[in-house]
Image (tube, rainbow, N blue to C red):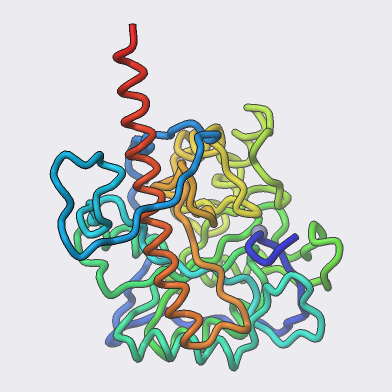
Length: 332
Ligand SMILES: [Zn+2]
């Protein structure tokens, strides 16, 4: 399993109760009590097997208007609605001797990465806060921070560093494995998971808790009733733990297909995190940027650029597929 697919391990202990994440002394991401909004429409989902082509190179001159849409320069492409927010994907923040999946970032490296964001005028926030700010048109300086699997070291190592900068984050936990270990990760070292009490405390302190399903199981290909359990039941379980709405979902291993996105939407979630860009990219398949222990400033800058490029390529593919579908509809 490569590093861009979720999982991991480690051995933190003595998790401290975190204080509320603040900005200027005010809680910025406290859970809301209202019910999540009605299911939002998915973005159009072109065929997943549609052929992919390379994007055109951006040109300095505007091409003739008669050029097909797929040849338009990148600068002409719409951006406000079609770009994805930048969301960083972490798993474990700890010191590990073995890390075969490269999913552990040392606390020192993590502090460097967070400091780098802060120096660039960015503020790390939960994905919930990011999506709300984006809807209000004020997400320019925000970066989503997500932590998959719900490792206990999130509270022990990540939270104090994030608090020092007034940042927030989302922890996606496996609803039926709280207090246990990452037994799904057979080849990596064992890592303990946040307990029920720790998740309750994190939520009470304002950290977003999202669902990572049940049993850390990939969703694509599951029968409809199992998909429903993975999404709806995991949400119900976690809402009892956090005492409020759980509106974010994160696909185990980043694995997603159309049926999974529909199940997540129908279960009442407001958004869902995937990993890779795909034809499903949108509110229920948000792409995320893997961050590892090797990622210093220049690699983070490069990954930011790569994210933007992938957004552009994804949109180009969408436009081509939409155009192709339009041509097909016109054929008698
Ligand atoms: Zn995971």
